[in-house]
Every structure is written in C-alpha cells, then in structure tokens.
Image (cartoon, rainbow, N blue to C red; front, side, top):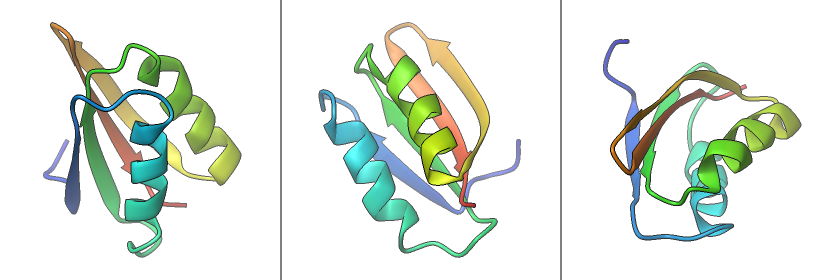
Length: 76
C-alpha cells in the first residue's frame, strides 16, 4: 500500500481508547483519505474491523508484526 495520509500511534492504549482515538482522527479527514493506526491492544483485532463496519469506513489492510498491529482505514 502507498503511504497513508495520516498515522496514529495508539501503542500502549487499551480498549476502547485505540478506536476512540481513530474515530477522532478520522473525523478530521476527508472521505477517501487513509489513516494508518498502530496499536498493541489485543482487542483491537476485533474492535477496529467492527468499528469500521459500524462507522462506514473501509478496512483496507491489517497486519501483525510481533505484538504490534497495523490497520489501514479509508474514511467512508
């Protein structure tokens, strides 16, 4: 994937903070822009896809490297 428009560091934050921070940051973006969020909360693997579905955003990609999870979210 190309570079995202914005990167959000949610490392060290526990549920529900990664999703809340993503929601706040996405609210400042235009439709079609991409937010990359990096998190290490194990619950994010379930919470972020659910949030995207409920909020009308598209989860473009998610991957795990060790304990770090990376999500690329396109604002709906």
